[in-house]
Image (cartoon, rainbow, N blue to C red; front, side):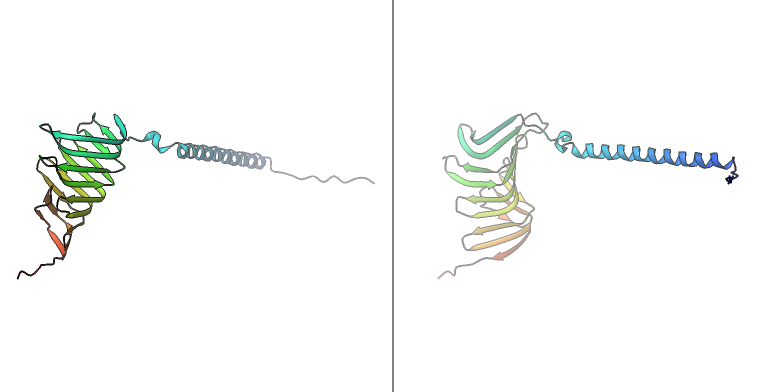
Length: 207
């Protein structure tokens, strides 16, 4: 039995065009996959690099732990400082000392008698400006036991002035006074004022 051979007529001009189309599509897919792979790898590498590597954080010239020192004026001790950690940046245009773990500062009068104490969770001392910045759980107590509490306090040594634009609370005997900002006083809190205040003041009747 003779076999039958079927023949199919193809358009010879059509086949090459179809073949070329699939080749181009394949090349596009491969190119896209390579591009995405490069982007993915680049993103991963960038994300794996520690941020600190590009940090512009300043490096202190001196770092000390459990540091204590006294400040004198004309041979008389006027301040005593204690801090768990001290960083000194004396190469800056405006040199300063930083206390990243808090500090405690005592002030003395001419007779070496304590007249005030200041403590905070963080602080800076700007040498040229003779200015102290205290932030975080700021507590200041004067010789009478009057207590100031705030989240920020600035002390100007030359002007013998302290001030704050943050919330401030002062307890003075039976008086409990709070202010929402604009507090100013001398460093011993003997004369102080608020722009905005509220609180309770108890007055004892005189016979």
